Amino acid sequence: MKFWKLALASAAIAWLSSTVSLAAKTALVLGIVLEPPHLDPTAGAAAAIDEIVYANIFEGLTRIGPKGDVLPALAESWTKSDDGKVYTFKLHRDVKFHDGTSFGADDVKFSLDRARDGKSTNAQKGLFAAIDKVEIVDPLTVKVSLKQPSGDFLYNMGWGDAVIVAPESAELNKQTPIGTGPFRFDSWAKGSQIVIAKNPVYWGTPALLDKATFRVIPDPAAATAALLAGDVQAFPVFPSYETIPQFQADPRFKVVIGTTEGETVLGMNNKKPPFDNLKVRQAIAHAIDRKTLIDGAMFGLGTPIGSFFPPHHPSYVDLTSETNYDPQLAKKLLAEAGHADGFKTTLKLPPPTYARRGGEIIAAELREIGIEAEIIPVEWAQWLDQVFKNRDYDLTIVSHTEPNDLNIFARDDDYYFNYDNLAFKELVKQIDAVSDGSKRTELYKQAQKVLANDVPAAFLFQLPKTGIWDAKVEGLWENGPIQANDLTAVK
Image 1 (cartoon, rainbow, N blue to C red):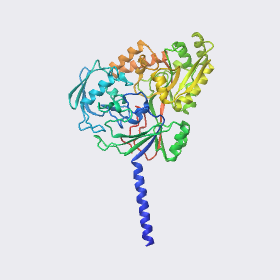
Image 2: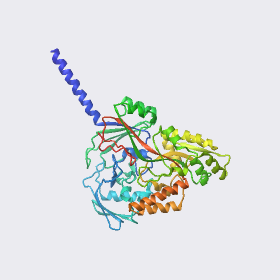
Image 3: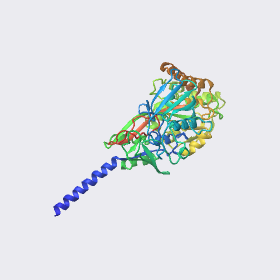
Image 4: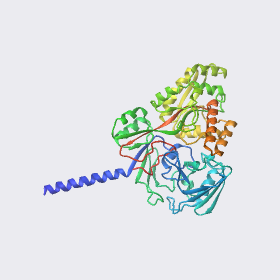
């Protein structure tokens, strides 16, 4: 009798163990550094929004894949007119939003017209500037006519800012997002975590996970402890660079160092004295030692950049020599600008490690040429409000992780750099209108040189994607071609 009890107990324990193991594979806890201000990617610039909802909750006509390629999404196919000005999208049928309403051509027209409307709060309205009109051909066919050919149009439609929303729920998406994706919104404990759950009636290939929890852990030491304790199974962008070797030596974890679209810059308010003076901006750029910055703030991870362009792009030009580290030249330029004795300024730093640690290093380097930069730490919501929205700042450090975003320097009327250069704006227009690869490359190179010479910001380094996760987890992206944690193939 005792033998059978023991056997039954052992069997029960084994069953329970396998059940727990199985359950563990259907749920995933991911660490994120920044909590998003809300969850509507069509109404905010914060990368933290897309890091949760892109491809998971919301979908666009197209989507950006893990290699940066344009893939079909809600549009199963499309055709382009010979003159490159008309795109006709054929939509997937039997697609429903998470609230049960049906998706169709009317939702596409609503979303694109809403995004490009003059009253739109979309942070990337430039993505839709080329659109002349959107027409419904039939319930599953949409025709989009452009004002002029746009080589980036299909790519632009894959951004998080271009996802398709429904008129019935669009105004509620900030707190209770409703999309068409493989996951639906479950809950949000402010300051702690956001939970998404598998969409049981998804139109496409179902997600392999039943649930994913995005846990907000801004502190690098806490991020390390959470991974080691198993409280978090994955940190797609791990913030504690100095502990990466520890995880590389631990067989329980997989460490993947990839690339991102994140150009990290020392932003300057170009319309605020003394930063409206080119020589002052040049002096600041020459005062920064990129190697010291990357070693000190990033523990050697990161690639120096001399303009606003990713080094992995085929059209990249290495222009770091244009603003090489030269403190004596920096002092000379300051004197020529009328600031031989330097000046006082402020440096607002958001929470990411690269900003807080990098800010300390840059402030020390600026002090060497006579510029006293008072460091002002701000939370992410404060940065978005004060710096990005209201342009209330002198200097700041941030990484721009949006893809193909050279054109932000052509947005003097609504972008925080306050940079205004007609020649650069013309180059951006030409780039957008050209689809020939060699011509675009030449224009991209010209645009990079304009920014390197005009120094609207001090270009620092390309942010690496420092991914660490449980060795058993599969399907997370190695690189970051877009600001996303696409969980559609994760198991």
